[in-house]
Image (cartoon, rainbow, N blue to C red):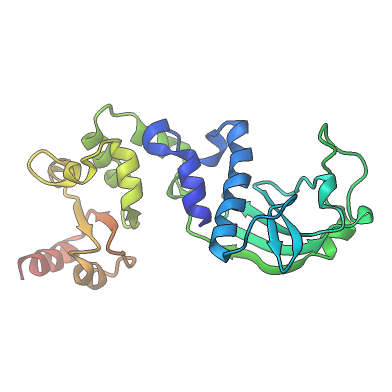
Length: 249
């Protein structure tokens, strides 16, 4: 759920942005709203009259942060609050519950009278998930030089060729392929006869698809690939022999 929400806000295919740090300040607020809506749908819990959830007649607030602190509104005092924290860099999230009390909040607040949770309050959070991994943003794992090189070509086919040329032996999701191609026929850009495979083949780079080449990928000792993931490699002579035998059989 978190991965889908963040990817939708970053919106790489239409915005040419790759990471969370590139989004606008107003969009960060939207992440919290979307988490609240999706969580309510996921749990099948109705919206409260004043707060985000109504659980067994109790109004419950939902607060999400992509930083370290939450902004607790005055109306949440005296109510349970579901606290969600997202760390996109490490791809880990936490979810806990705290009944908000006056003495558990920091003194002072922002213009909306929202306040952060104090050290004492933090110690009283009951964590349901803590530093739980979620699917990584592929681009967070790439250095800025690699990102810039993949963005540079004007055509989708060449961008894809650059992606698989620079990032080898790493499963790459279809969603990344679509965001790099930035075209409706993104899969066509991977094929031979004018696609990225032609350019990669000239460099001696093989491109494998988890759906069609799962056994080949396993025999080569590459990381497992799902049916919507791709992986490239410039094979060693031994790998080339194995690859040729497998693809011909």
